[in-house]
Every structure is written in C-alpha cells, then in structure tokens.
Image (cartoon, rainbow, N blue to C red):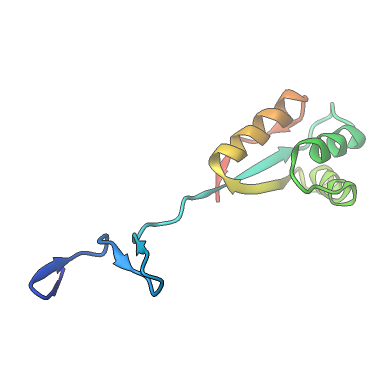
Length: 106
C-alpha cells in the first residue's frame, strides 16, 4: 500500500486518466476458444456452411482452410473471444451437428 497525501492507495483504487475520466485497475475478461473436432459424420461442405453461417466475418475460403485443418489435425480453433459469444457459437455449431470440444479458456 502506498500513501498519497496521507490517504492509503491500493492497486485497485480508481485512478484519473489524462482525459479526467476515472480508470479502474481491473484485469481484462478472459477469452474462450471455440474448437470443432473431426468426426466421421459431417462433410466438408456442411462444416464450411456452418462456420460461414454462425461465425462473424467467416469467409468461405477461411472456412475451407479450417475444415481441412479439422480433418487433417483432428481439431481447429474456429473462433476466440468473450465467453458469452463463445457459448453462443459453440451451441449453434453443436446444434447443427458439428462435434465440439468443450469451451477452452484462452
């Protein structure tokens, strides 16, 4: 603990930014990885269609690369980001029949 003009200051105390706004010293929220697993059920086309449909900004070319990685390596990370969005994409892809690994904290 540091003393500032007789007032104790801890690392979680608010600080003032150059713009005058109060800034709290907080750790960022963790990201989660959405991982699709290889299986003997889904076709490349179905995997690509699902990735393009549900993953934001997913292009068909990127989806085909990921489908090839899933097939060749057994899995691929298809999206990384905040937990709520990761849970949504995980549920949507799984709902389409893709084989999903449990969400992984990044």
